[in-house]
View 1 (tube, rainbow, N blue to C red):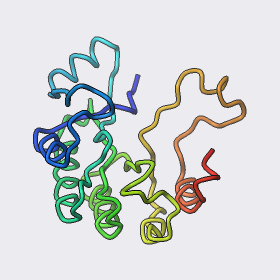
View 2 (view 1 turned 90 degrees about the vertical axis):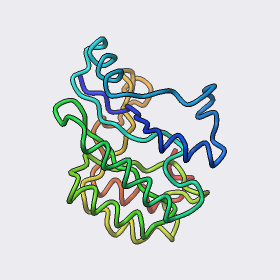
View 3 (view 1 turned 180 degrees about the vertical axis):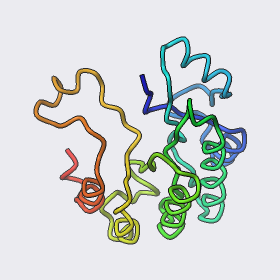
View 4 (view 1 turned 45 degrees about the vertical axis):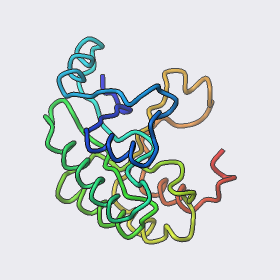
Length: 183
């Protein structure tokens, strides 16, 4: 089994998030501690052969483009350095810094060999399809996957919808569609 929705944390990520006021991530009482050893133990106990890691919400942009670029690069390089037999990763992008995101997409695929990139549902109040994202959309010819895994009951919940990773044209359509078309 492959886990396509697995998060990882580094101390510098948690510190940056806390400095920005994110003290209770996604309703948790605090940031969880994360280690490779703990993650592997949990995977082994659950019969998971490989996990594709990503940074949790709220992502890597906490207000300053340059710091977001540095944090995205650090998180992506840390994920890429893990055991490739057990871990893959979806690269973090410093959105809404589109120029930085395009550069990180290139680096993540060309140098780090990322399995995909993470696109959060919004970045700094900008949503996929915002005209400012056009340079990222133009770069969407690369294979891009998101970190969402369809649940086992997906066919019952959404009859007729295919269960496959998005293709480049799917990403282009998602990035250019107005928000009301997402439902």
